[in-house]
Length: 165
Image (cartoon, rainbow, N blue to C red; front, side, top):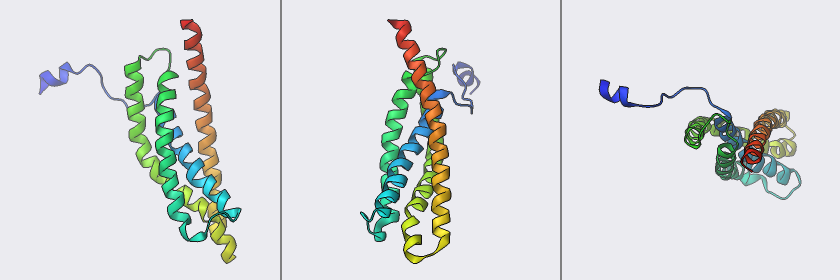
């Protein structure tokens, strides 16, 4: 056992770099955009019936999350910090994926609440409307934070491209 422990080259830490943060934020943000804001907008515009709002919003959230995971992992690896290698950035992306799993469950609840705005309006009940508004505010906060990390990763990628050419 001791020989195995001594032979490992890297230790795992809890902290994430820009790649891991982008994977978590991009996964949840893209899911919220597709499953939360899109479904709520369509429902409020009368383009979607109230019967399938919850299943549609949660289903589209997970589709958006998978798309966001792929895109954010690619951008995160390309926009990694200058001190990281590809392998270290990929490890950070994998760690971000592990953190994104529980974050996606929270995001799916937010997307579901956002879709319920039309039910609150239809029934004349204030509680679903307040819940939808709070979910939208939290979702916007997640998206703004993700945008900041995305801009940092984009700047890193542009700096790396400029150095190589």
